[in-house]
Length: 152
Ligand SMILES: [Zn+2]
Image (cartoon, rainbow, N blue to C red):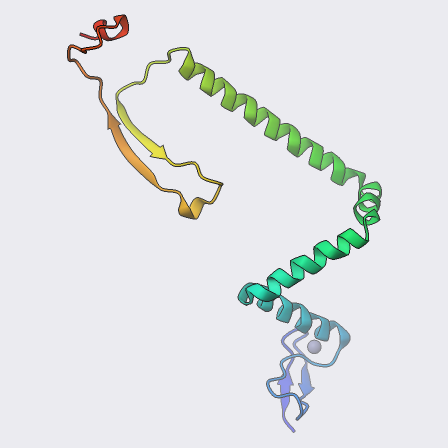
């Protein structure tokens, strides 16, 4: 019978022969930690398990619709926090709108280096970006529009 150090509480415990590679002692808290770690590992390495878990969680919430209502009632600050988060998102949207307006009102595109980036569904890993140089053309534009004549 060999003794091992528990990975949770750090105390030495007596290894049970029927559990090879035992790293946690039999204290309830340590067994809970062991289960949590197993679940976390499983979530990271097993997509099927992850799928299953989130499906179970959704199904559980479907069966307990009062859960979120009760949670919000018991935690009013959570709702407040959520509201202010939405507000700042709204502010950001207004800033973006202002930026768009600048462009549409003829803000000059200055020569220089620009980065062109594909805005996809927020998946940063799949987005590609190019650095492009923009230089004004000083040629006689065949379109003969005023805006082009001004540049020649
Ligand atoms: Zn322990």
